[in-house]
Image 1 (cartoon, rainbow, N blue to C red):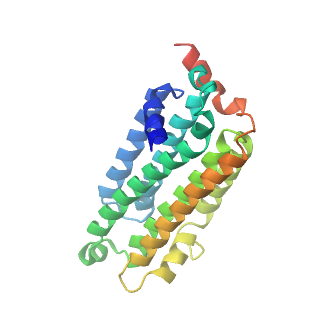
Image 2 (image 1 turned 120 degrees about the horizontal axis):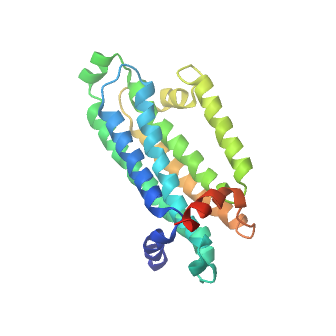
Length: 232
């Protein structure tokens, strides 16, 4: 726990810390705003889940890039700052935003709201699973992003392209799984599976970061941020 607290305290030493914090707040606020705005279509509701999912990536960046600083290069915390600490803090922040989203969605999705907007229970709650899937993907991506930048980015883009290609079809993973998990109008199974998926993502993030620890940080992943930091 002490190491985790130290990780929070070291936020200010991360590359472009102020900008990253601002971006995380912007994506969180936009996610909430999209959720509370009545659009005619489920795509924009999923956009709110996507925006909220992204906040965890910014938290990971804040913690991990502290190890680029000379202050932490010789620190005994260096290994933990590239493995357990960012994984735990990012998982915690992701669970927090997921919980916020789940609470809001469950409170809003009344039978009257669904009937008025032409949504089904699957439309309403598959976005929770959708958010869990993307948090899982982002957590795994984070473990690779600073060590194998190009490879991890290509894979992430490919996943997004595939999602866009099949979204709102019978092949949508979130919709398909939601049909299997939702019992009448009860979202409990969907929510439980979503949390389990996020926890698994956090575990894999930690395990992969351990495997990649001895691999050097890819210059491309921090080059621009370093230039910006050095110019100030």
